[in-house]
Image: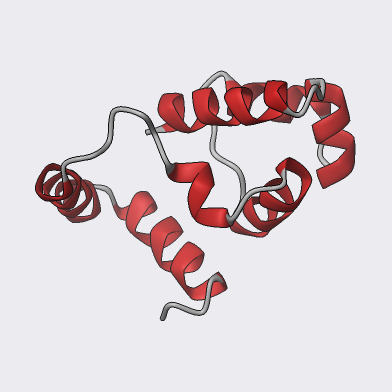
Length: 103
């Protein structure tokens, strides 16, 4: 998931002709931290997701629109499996949904 998210960010960033350094500065994180996100090594904090969507000029949901994710049943199965087996992912997902006002 981190790799796909990073790839999606890179697509959106390059479409806006921004550098990693530009985006990092605009969302107020260190360039090396942003680089780690784009390279799939880490995931942004929930509060930085909203900043990213604003800087990249897309709705928050568009950050997660991966080209290869189209089968709802497979998506649901993968999410349930991840939440069931990964406490940190469950907590992060909860915080993310809460920040969106979905919980």
